[in-house]
Image (cartoon, rainbow, N blue to C red; front, side, top):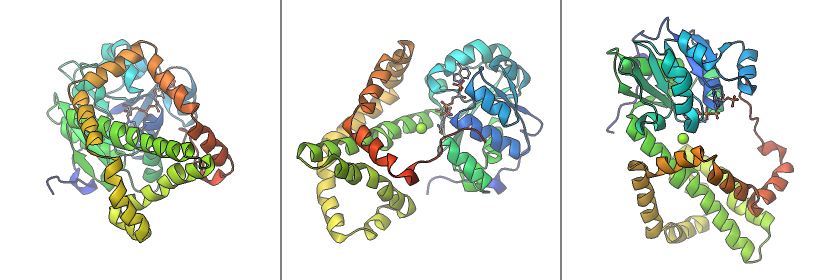
Length: 336
Ligand code: NDP
Ligand code: MG
């Protein structure tokens, strides 16, 4: 393999020791990282606006400040607001409070890579990007493990920015699962590509289209839901555990044969070309520009797409069926 995973024993420096770390944002990632770092013995404070996150962080026993105050008190400012408004928060409340030698940390490269945020030359700019949702990062940490993470350095003022990024990942429990080195550009490109083409955009389009074909052909929407959406998780779990081989091994020969024959007809050369174009749009900044323009326009397009999704027959049928299956619901809360 061309890359080396790092583990706890490989991260031996101590530059993070004694630093005050401010988490700007206490949502999915902020909640997980702040609690993990505190449990690892570091001095953690939280900077958020008044509201639910502020209350949650207080309830979890953190010192909670305005973003500006937290940035002023901190040696390390970890930016964990939604990506689209991060540059606004940074410019208004963080930038004026950065001091020489501070560390500016991220969990996604978007703002730095696309130059929405341009840090001063006299700070370190690093990334620790967990490869999993916040709740899982927190839960696995508490179970004595962690979620693997990427680390990267964009700007090395101190001369040990990379060590700091690795220590931060270790403090999050991520080095128990494995750390991989990357760059802001690589992480941004791959993350956006994956979510748009495979994990979210690709999967939802596949589920939706399959559902529509069955329903339009006269099959019951309820059965179509089970067939195309509900079972997706069961199949994904098997793939996660042992790749396609394990998934096929646990399924019938009929299903395996049919999937080899039909799969490449559904996701075909034209789908691949659409993915290539999507990748180019990410690489040259077209997607980022479009997304930020929609944000600055009040997210008109995002909210219209969301409305359409919420009103779809698939969502409604699924909601009704999930209502009868309380076991599929997971707790969604960002309080510890
Ligand atoms: P969330 O939406 O879950 O949380 C955002 C936090 O920012 C909330 O605490 C919110 O507080 C706060 N916030 C919103 N607006 C402001 C504001 N104007 N001023 C101050 N605070 C504000 O975000 P995520 O945790 O999902 O994402 C954070 C970063 O982590 C992003 O860069 C994302 O790409 C990255 N990431 C996320 C992952 C995930 O698990 N979701 C996985 C890997 C990376 P309030 O309650 O007041 O709105
Ligand atoms: Mg992502």
